[in-house]
Image: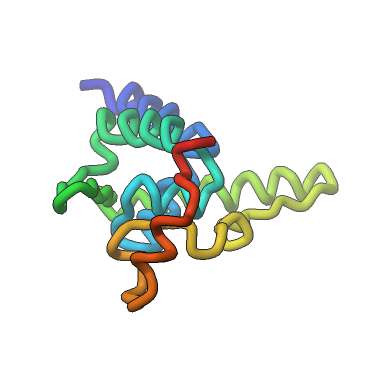
Length: 139
């Protein structure tokens, strides 16, 4: 296989801003379910699922089922170097043009909106609140 073609394919897959954000969250958190990514990125579940499918097809992420939840993680942590290089290069190019880029995943997170077992903290009153909480899918 042509190495340039393989490298080009990798860059194409990583070339979407949401996919870069997904990779950053997975690299930072180790693994995440779609609802976790949804709450961190402010994207709809359907969009995140499509991006995860593309990342999975490219061999960059794998999934693991745990009950009703599917957790995603990166296959090779060396993808961090690609993400870091993309951020660094984009920032340097922007600075040459007098601009400054912001890469802030933490500012996108909606507090306590991920209902997965990994994110929800045990709370004795949770069952009654959970029934009254509107579904995120109802939007």
